[in-house]
Amino acid sequence: MPWQGTTAHLYERLDRYARNDRSAWPRSPKGLSDQLRRIAPAFRTKAIEITHMGHTRQGGQWRIAASTPSDPITSTRDF
Image (cartoon, rainbow, N blue to C red; front, side, top):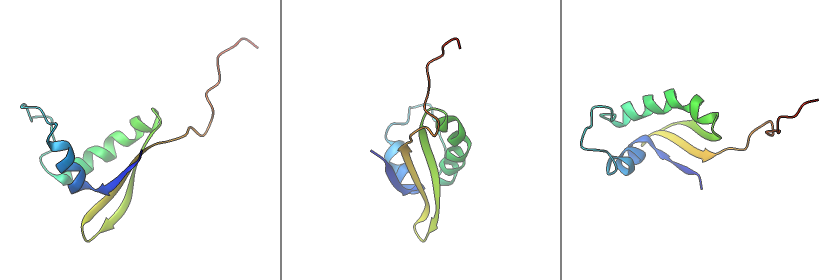
C-alpha cells in the first residue's frame, strides 16, 4: 500500500518510532526530506520507489510505494 503526503506528516508519523538516542534521527522535516533524497536510489534497487512529487503550500509532497522492476529478474543458468 503506497503512502503519499507531506514531509511534515511523514516526520510526525515516524517520530513516534524514534529511539531514545536521536543522534542519527533527522531534526526536522527538512532533514527528513534530505534523507529521503539520499536513500531513494538504494531503496529503488530493493523495489521501493521514493518519489518527490513537488511542493504545495503544506510543504514537500512525497510518495513511497513498492515498485515493479522494469526488467524481470531471471534465474541464473548456464547458456
